[in-house]
Image 1 (cartoon, helix red, strand yellow):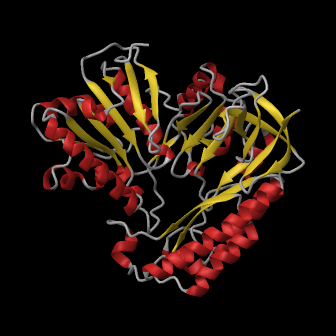
Image 2 (cartoon, rainbow, N blue to C red; image 1 turned 120 degrees about the vertical axis):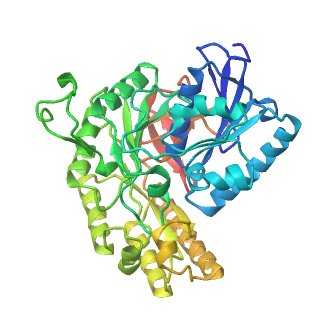
Image 3 (cartoon, helix red, strand yellow; image 1 turned 90 degrees about the horizontal axis):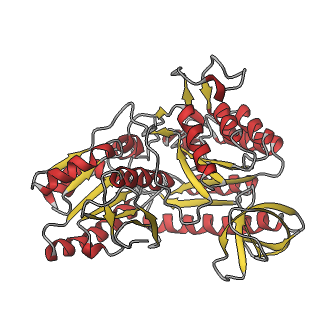
Amino acid sequence: MDSENKIIIESKQGEALIIENPKGKNGKKLFLESYGCQMNFSDSEIVASILMNKGYTTTDNFKEADIILLNTCAIRENAEQRVRNRLNDFKRVKQANPKALVGVLGCMAERLKSQLLDQEKLVDIVVGPDSYRDLPNLIEEAEDGRKAINVILSKEETYADLTPVRLGSNGVTAFISITRGCDNMCSFCVVPFTRGRERSRDPESIVKEAKEAFEAGYREVTLLGQNVDSYKWSGGGLKKEILTEEQKNSAVNFAKLLEMVASVNPDLRVRFSTSHPKDLTDEVIHMIAKYENICNHIHLPVQSGNSRILEMMNRGYTREWYLERIAAIKRIIPYVGISMDIITGFCSETDEEHKDTLSLMEQVKYDFGYMFMYSERPKTLAERKFKDDVPEEIKRKRIAEIVDLQRQHSEIRTLEGLGKVHRVLIEGFSKKSDEKLMGRNSQNSVVVFPKGNHKKGEYVNVLVDECTSSTLIGKVI
């Protein structure tokens, strides 16, 4: 492969992901780096597609790039600080090569547009999540010395007509965005202000993308949205052959969309993220149970185990409601993996309310989770209405207790996989040995086993006979 005719994407872990550019060259080199959530990495696939169509090639060395783009996250303060540190690295590149352009994409771009462009002069281009189609024009404007900024939020943009450039290095798993934006207005969250109002993508384009991914060799797709459970399409105009009789002439909700994607092929696994407890219906849970290729794993953020704090967070449910949803999941899908998000140290949280979170964790016993100390974000309702009054040392003490408890629960849940046969989709080599392969089971647990004659993209049945605190180990049977 011609080393100049590639797209190089560097992940937040610093791994260069290389793909061919079939559109030829325009003489300009691109370096693109992504931070944050799965939605950001999915957006980077859209950006790569747009620029490939304009003939951009890339380098894995940002020091020789003509344009450097950072796809950013604004959900927590430390994420923004990491990006600022990276921009300072790129500032030194511009000193050596004044014609080089630096651009910030995504959530941080929308939030800090004028500050990054005018006050700190760290970037030449600022592009919000709904303006990626305008990137080629903005690059031209910046090359002419003009301010290049487009952070207009859209009520319609879903990029449904664009074919993403698959940046995943394993060639087995792919992301498909089904919604953009969010209407929930959680008091701690900046996403509605950086990604705009929620809108659903038409199901026909989603099913088409899933089919194309399967035909290209992918065996798992993850449907992405800030709140997938509120997906709803009633735009009409769908080709009737992709719908069942029951679905014809009716709106497509998330449960029906799951069924449509699962029906693409029994060997195409379907995952999704993220669910919202107030919108997770029994219909969705039953649909997961109905189809073997819809994975038995639900990521259900709780944020707090105390109803007063949940009300302050504007989450739209109580502790009791959340636990009822957990009970329904476990009743309908007996062997299910459940993961969570938790924020500790939210405004005015007391020790007793923190203990409510610990007790909820004890009841649920999550497989794994993402746990954070509260970080006040500008523009949010919490910043305007509440005082961030929990001392830092208390936050650190509480997060340590939460992480320690989750570590115990993860080990308990992993041990439950011993002695069972797990259907595993092989994703590649184990991190520790090229003599072993790894994949995940339906519950999203990592399973490691001797490679034998197997290769990635295959399904295998693995009898698990040992484990670490978070990984299942066994042999193919």
